[in-house]
Image 1: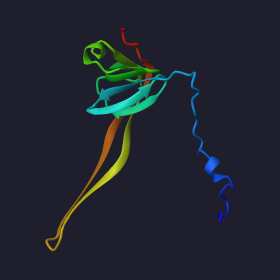
Image 2 (image 1 turned 180 degrees about the vertical axis):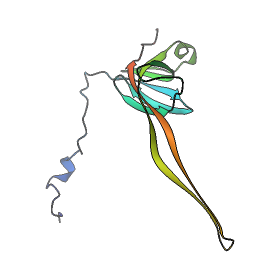
Image 3 (image 1 turned 45 degrees about the vertical axis):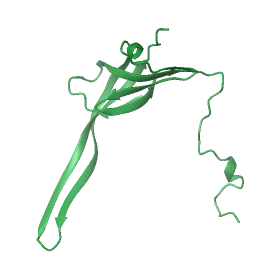
Image 4 (image 1 turned 135 degrees about the vertical axis):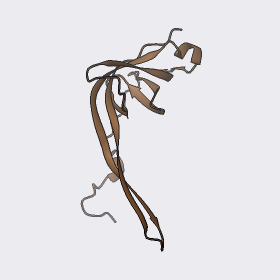
Length: 132
Protein backbone atom coordinates (compact mmCIF):
# COMPACT_ATOMS: atom_id res chain seq x y z
CA UNK A 1 0.00 0.00 0.00
CA UNK A 2 2.46 2.67 1.18
CA UNK A 3 6.19 2.47 0.67
CA UNK A 4 8.49 2.84 3.63
CA UNK A 5 9.66 6.37 4.27
CA UNK A 6 6.67 8.03 2.64
CA UNK A 7 4.44 9.97 5.07
CA UNK A 8 1.11 8.31 5.63
CA UNK A 9 -0.82 11.38 4.52
CA UNK A 10 1.42 11.97 1.50
CA UNK A 11 -1.26 13.99 -0.29
CA UNK A 12 -1.01 16.61 2.47
CA UNK A 13 2.71 17.12 1.88
CA UNK A 14 3.04 20.17 -0.38
CA UNK A 15 6.77 19.87 -0.85
CA UNK A 16 7.58 23.00 1.13
CA UNK A 17 5.37 25.27 -0.98
CA UNK A 18 4.49 28.59 0.60
CA UNK A 19 0.98 29.82 -0.06
CA UNK A 20 0.22 33.52 -0.05
CA UNK A 21 -2.59 34.99 1.96
CA UNK A 22 -5.41 36.45 -0.10
CA UNK A 23 -4.95 39.84 1.58
CA UNK A 24 -1.28 39.97 0.47
CA UNK A 25 -0.85 41.67 -2.90
CA UNK A 26 2.11 40.48 -4.98
CA UNK A 27 3.51 42.86 -7.58
CA UNK A 28 5.52 41.31 -10.38
CA UNK A 29 6.62 42.17 -13.90
CA UNK A 30 7.69 40.39 -17.05
CA UNK A 31 10.92 41.97 -18.30
CA UNK A 32 13.09 41.50 -21.37
CA UNK A 33 16.84 41.05 -21.12
CA UNK A 34 19.23 39.50 -23.61
CA UNK A 35 16.47 38.27 -25.92
CA UNK A 36 14.75 36.36 -23.08
CA UNK A 37 11.81 37.15 -20.85
CA UNK A 38 11.93 36.82 -17.06
CA UNK A 39 9.21 37.05 -14.40
CA UNK A 40 10.56 39.22 -11.57
CA UNK A 41 9.37 40.65 -8.26
CA UNK A 42 11.06 43.05 -5.85
CA UNK A 43 13.89 41.26 -4.02
CA UNK A 44 14.29 38.48 -6.61
CA UNK A 45 17.78 37.57 -7.82
CA UNK A 46 17.63 36.68 -11.52
CA UNK A 47 20.32 35.24 -13.80
CA UNK A 48 20.39 37.04 -17.18
CA UNK A 49 22.85 36.96 -20.08
CA UNK A 50 25.99 38.94 -19.31
CA UNK A 51 25.58 42.71 -19.26
CA UNK A 52 29.12 43.66 -20.25
CA UNK A 53 28.76 47.41 -19.57
CA UNK A 54 27.67 46.97 -15.93
CA UNK A 55 29.98 46.44 -12.98
CA UNK A 56 29.06 44.83 -9.65
CA UNK A 57 27.00 47.32 -7.62
CA UNK A 58 25.76 49.28 -10.65
CA UNK A 59 22.06 49.90 -11.27
CA UNK A 60 20.53 48.68 -14.54
CA UNK A 61 17.12 49.30 -16.12
CA UNK A 62 15.14 46.49 -17.74
CA UNK A 63 12.40 47.09 -20.30
CA UNK A 64 8.97 45.94 -19.14
CA UNK A 65 6.50 43.82 -21.13
CA UNK A 66 3.82 43.34 -18.45
CA UNK A 67 3.13 44.58 -14.91
CA UNK A 68 0.74 42.79 -12.51
CA UNK A 69 -0.25 44.72 -9.38
CA UNK A 70 -2.82 42.59 -7.56
CA UNK A 71 -5.86 42.53 -9.87
CA UNK A 72 -4.57 45.34 -12.11
CA UNK A 73 -2.71 44.02 -15.17
CA UNK A 74 -0.93 46.56 -17.36
CA UNK A 75 0.03 45.41 -20.84
CA UNK A 76 -0.47 48.59 -22.90
CA UNK A 77 2.81 49.26 -24.75
CA UNK A 78 2.33 53.06 -24.56
CA UNK A 79 2.05 52.95 -20.77
CA UNK A 80 4.84 50.38 -20.36
CA UNK A 81 7.25 52.48 -22.47
CA UNK A 82 7.75 54.75 -19.46
CA UNK A 83 8.10 51.97 -16.89
CA UNK A 84 11.60 50.59 -16.33
CA UNK A 85 12.33 47.97 -13.68
CA UNK A 86 15.35 48.94 -11.56
CA UNK A 87 17.86 46.23 -10.63
CA UNK A 88 21.30 46.09 -9.01
CA UNK A 89 24.13 43.96 -10.42
CA UNK A 90 25.15 41.37 -7.83
CA UNK A 91 27.64 39.13 -9.65
CA UNK A 92 29.17 38.08 -12.98
CA UNK A 93 29.76 34.34 -13.39
CA UNK A 94 29.87 31.45 -15.84
CA UNK A 95 27.15 28.83 -16.22
CA UNK A 96 27.50 25.08 -16.37
CA UNK A 97 29.70 23.56 -19.07
CA UNK A 98 27.96 22.23 -22.16
CA UNK A 99 29.73 19.51 -24.17
CA UNK A 100 29.21 19.66 -27.93
CA UNK A 101 30.13 16.47 -29.79
CA UNK A 102 29.97 16.06 -33.57
CA UNK A 103 30.29 12.60 -35.08
CA UNK A 104 29.79 11.13 -38.53
CA UNK A 105 29.56 7.40 -38.97
CA UNK A 106 32.22 5.47 -40.93
CA UNK A 107 34.29 8.54 -41.85
CA UNK A 108 36.44 9.08 -38.77
CA UNK A 109 34.96 12.57 -38.29
CA UNK A 110 34.86 13.52 -34.62
CA UNK A 111 34.87 17.02 -33.12
CA UNK A 112 34.62 17.97 -29.49
CA UNK A 113 33.83 21.44 -28.23
CA UNK A 114 32.84 22.94 -24.88
CA UNK A 115 30.93 26.08 -23.97
CA UNK A 116 30.23 28.01 -20.75
CA UNK A 117 27.70 30.82 -21.04
CA UNK A 118 28.48 34.03 -19.16
CA UNK A 119 25.74 35.31 -16.86
CA UNK A 120 25.04 38.35 -14.71
CA UNK A 121 23.10 37.95 -11.46
CA UNK A 122 20.86 40.95 -10.77
CA UNK A 123 18.67 41.78 -7.78
CA UNK A 124 15.41 43.60 -8.53
CA UNK A 125 15.11 46.68 -6.32
CA UNK A 126 12.07 48.54 -7.70
CA UNK A 127 9.05 47.96 -9.92
CA UNK A 128 7.34 51.32 -10.49
CA UNK A 129 3.54 51.41 -10.56
CA UNK A 130 1.80 52.12 -13.86
CA UNK A 131 0.25 55.58 -14.21
CA UNK A 132 -3.51 55.27 -14.35
